[in-house]
Length: 111
Length: 114
Image (cartoon, rainbow over all chains, first blue to last red; front, top):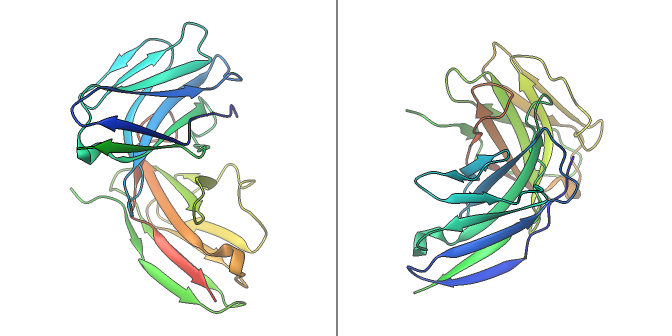
């Protein structure tokens, strides 16, 4: 399974965009990129996922590099409720979709 | 609708005792996953079920760990002869099927082994 590398922590000012990077240089052609976030004392929650093309949903956007070796989660306007640990996860289609989490990026939002 | 529920929410046990952790998935979800999160660590995949079958048990840390799922619904994770290193939050997730789709996580069971 492809490993992911993320910065340990990042800070953002409230109402500004946030770009959370993730490197996954060993990704294979059938691997999907998922982002989940975990608020304190809660289980992770889904943010977004994609394969090759950039993806948008009501929570965020996912920008995937052309070679797929990296991706960026974009929160368009950070709020205090977005303070969480963000995990970039790679899963392989056809293997049950088990997630192998890295250590994630702890996002602090400054009022 | 109801989300994934887990019980107990907290469990304190003595080293060497057996514990059972329960997960109730979202109704209609055929896939169920177990993870654990040790203090200050990321989440570690343990095992998943598609229906009542667990195709890959290699993520279980040792033979003291076992899991079962009955009726395609409730799952139980059993840890025998608990050790202090088993202390962690055990998280369960479910999804419509064991493929590329959203996993819904429960609140977890915090296990403390004294």
